[in-house]
Image: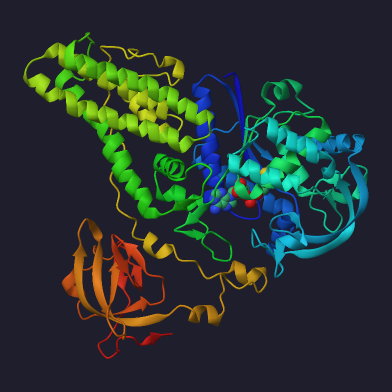
Length: 640
Ligand code: MSP
């Protein structure tokens, strides 16, 4: 492995970063870190896509210039990536000066190759996808696949001879099975190309937020030509030859499945036309759902990336995102599952392993890495088995990363962690200590600590902070895979104490009420939307009722929750699980009349289906106070 160049899509600056943006960039970061550990010369590129109609319109709505909007939101992505401690080598912006020059050169090369002609375009355009669509791809004024609204466009336009590249593209897919992955995506793209390619309109005249067409200032360049070119600008195309030769062709363009056509059809065609080598691979991952539902602007249920980063420790977030989504398929984000994986996999498996190995080293080996002695018999066999498993895990995980199956690589590492826990259970160091079998005890403890070192090194790409803590505790500096020679841990090294790596977590109670789609402010002009104004109809869509609490009890294992039976004036009482146990004793609530949201979709909280949400305020001392009514008010009365 000599070099590894990885890119993420560059993100539109019309909005704030969400989970999808965080996911791809974290994955790319894990891959970059992994290949660095394998000794590759790595370049990791990410950034923002700032031109085009979509950004221009978003800026107009806010009454600011597109550049102002781009500056603001690009900074927001950058801030997020810093918060997530991502190790990119360049954050490219399509408004960067070097990028304009590279894009202009690409267009000039396309022209010189006879691939561009002037004509007029008429057809459907969807600004939010920044793409043209055929009649067959549209239903009721919207794109079938994405739901984006289309508008009719008729204007003069430069065209790119995409049709000319139909055969070369098919040849590329056929002769390079790795070119587009997973296989199903390559088949999808190949059949789209085989069904016939039409030339592509690559300039617009009806707005101006874009890179000017060389020699024809009336036109701006179609934003996807501009955006895709970032992948070569980022590594110096046409302006830093040494850098370009060092990293191009790109090893993997990581993208989401919705932008496959642009990357697996248009991009290679543009490159062929411009006489640039094709990338090694385009890999399309699936989409995150929010608790089973597709995320969309109109549903208002996008999971905000900053909120995620504030809610969970960084390594847990990385772990969950990379472990939960089978790379290539869709994934479902569920807060309970983040907590579940934290508690049962990170805390109980990995955290426990590290704590036990530390505590036993303190207790049985005076806090130092013991010496290793060759052993015969069962113990000797158990020890060589651990060494073998470590080696196999290293090979498997590297192979799985090469095959772009990071979720399985991570799974293998957690299996190795279980193996090490199992090794403790089988060898019982405490019993060896009791029997005074010092050599056996030392060898077992050495093996355990060496296993933990291997595990921590292999986990660096996924859980960088945790790995660093573990390695620092062992007094180990190198994270390079080259240092993974069994027996590399130095005997006599004294261990430094590591704090609890993963504390057990409870479901953040606030999340219970956060997950329902927000009612979007009706866009009555940018000002109203900005100030969060909603119409009366929107308010009335929330059914607020008086609930009469009939009984209340604690929820076992969740010290913030109470389970209530609430009469809402209906045939039978409702069960409501509320996060108020820190502020109210169950007996204080019986017979109280409270304000309740009655038409929230019921959801399971700690195994119980909760059929309502109580309204409360947070008091200055951090407690909660319920909105209450006197006994004169009947259960079920509508609050308005
Ligand atoms: N600007 C273009 C990309 C240009 S690349 C030359 C763009 N930007 S985007 O901000 O809209 O989307 C960026 C990425 O986020 C895409 O890969 C898209 O698939 C991904 N995601 C958007 N929603 C997502 C989920 N719900 N889940 C996972 N990824 C998702 O497209």
